[in-house]
Structure formats: structure tokens, C-alpha cells
Image (cartoon, rainbow, N blue to C red):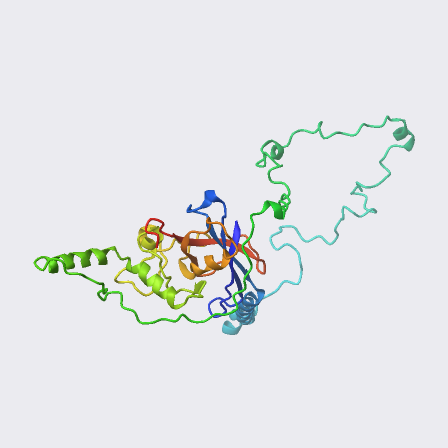
Amino acid sequence: MVLLLQLNGDLPDHFPGHERRLYVLTCRRKTCRRRDGSVRVLRGVRISESPAKDRRKTTGEAKSKSASSQSQMKTVTSTNIGESIFGVKQVRSSSSSNPFSTSPPSTTTTSPFNLTSASSTNPFSTTNLPPLSELASKPAQEPISAADLPKTFASAVSLNSNPTTYGLIPSPEPWPQDSDLPPPYPLYYLVDADYETLDKVSYDAPIPRQTMDIDEDGGSTGQKEDKDVYESTIDKTFQKFADRLAQNPEQVIRYEFKGQPLLYSKNDTVGKLLAPSHAQNAKVAAGQGPGGGRMPRCENCGSGRVFEVQLTPHAITELEAEDLSLEGMEWGTIIVGVCEKDCMPRGTDLGRVGYAEEWAGVQWEEVKEKR
């Protein structure tokens, strides 16, 4: 797959300490055209250690307060409450003898490690060993091999039946040669960003059209039927899309985190999924999936997804300006939905870069109508 867009998506107001990048990739093979998965989106994120340090500092202050309160409790409980209330002092024994013993305490003790004691025998003494002449006359013993040892229970009932599977992590595959990769698109830098130019256009007003009266008797009825048929064939969603882009002809991407995407059509799968209803015409919310009429949830953390960026057809014109073939990209727009919490991919440590796949809604160009 080749890169279509690499976007710096840092949002310090929403996600302080997060470094975000969005990558939109596409497949250039003929067999990939108009197929699900031919356009993929990756979100790279790295969370710096400064927010985590602030959280640890706050937690440390809370722990120090708890420790000081515990030390105060220990100071209070160290005093004998019985002495302070009843005035009776506790009698403490000065001897360390056993208070439950029936025999009088012994004044002498015998240490088993005392070499001068007659009642104990030193197990490490060399006086009990045989003479060296007898040790030299005995034949040398053969070492015991591991095969002669009895099989232990741990080795007999081992959970790791195949140790080679859980060995060292294999080395990553080498990066393929440039000749094995598909040809990339030309490199462009997006340096200018501005708000869209919008004119107030009403799509509910009657569309003017030229008419010609042929029959005076049935002319009015025929014109009314023709007008209804003509207006029913117009896709107002696509008309809004075309008029918006006509006012911004140099636009290649539209960006607004948690904004509203501009749909190419409302009749395809993506259009039916994201088209706002009459009760919801402001933002695209994230829900359980196609059954709920919203973007699919994040597979990494389960949170909802929101709109962030979309590519416009003028991006095709710029990327395929040097391509003289007739076979090129055939999408009308690519809509990118990301995790609303900018979650860290699983298994990624703090300060490391992790990658998570996000949702890409591709609205393909309608070939039949040839707009």
C-alpha cells in the first residue's frame, strides 16, 4: 500500500502530552479497486512522561498525607490508656524467662556449637573422619548424569510442552527493496490552512428550468409531472457536496475534530451509516455500529469514534497529475473516524510510539451516472 496522506494531528487542548499522526494508505493494484480494505487508516500516538509524572506527583502527595495521619495515630496509641484513666501502672517482668514454664529458669545454657562442651558433638569436626590412607585406597566414584536422576513431578507435568514456541522474539522481517514496492505518489506539503468559503445556498428552493408549451390543453399537467420527476432524480446530498467544493476549488482535505463530514452520497453504505436524521443534524455521534447508524467503536478500547478529516476529489487531481493512464483512483471522498479518547494501543509503554488502525469510510464515485 502507498501513502495518500500523513497528517500531524496534535491536539493539545483535547489531549495534552499526546503526539498524534494519521496515515491514510491505499492499494494501487487493479484487483483492489472498489474493495473493502483497499483504503486503510493508521493512528500513531506517543504519550509523553510529563502528564504521568504530574499524576504520580499528585498521588505521592496524597500518600504522604496518609502517612502523616498514620504517624499521628501511632503517637496517640503509643500511650497506655489504662494508666492514664485508672492510674495503675503495668508490672513489667525484668527477666526473659518463659512465664508459662513450671520449672525454675536455668542459669546455664549449653550451645550445640560450643566446642568445649562435653554434651554436644560438633558435626563439622575432623576428628571423626577416617584416616587419609583409607580414603585414598577407595576407588573414585563416577559422577551421576542427568539421565540417571529420577524424573521430577514438575518436569513430568509441564505446562510449557513446546518451549520453542515461547522462546526469543524473532527478529523483524527486513524492509523490502524499493523495486519490490509499488510506485509512490508525488510528495506535497500542505502549508496553507484556512476556513472554508461558504455561501448561503438553499437546496429546497424550486430549480428553474426552461419549458416549452406544446399543447395548451394538457400543458400545465405535463409540466408539473416533468418537474416532479426532474427534482426526484436530483441527489441533494451530492449537489451540496459539489457546490461546497466549487466554492473551495483548491481544497484537498477537510479537517475538524468531532465535526461533521461532507457526504458524497447518502445512498451508499457510508452515506446510510453517517447521514444525519431529522432529529440529529449537528454532529456525527459514535455508537455500536451499523445497527445504530453510527461509526463503529474503537477496537482497541471500546470507546466511540468521531470524525476528524476527509479527502476531497481535488486530491486525486494533484496526486495523479503526472499519471497519463486512464486507470486511477475512483473515490469521491475518504472519511476518517478516530477514537474519541485517543487511546494508547495495547502493549505500548509510556513514551513509546504505538499504532492503532482506525475507521476509513470510502464513498466511491458513481460510475453509472457519470457525474
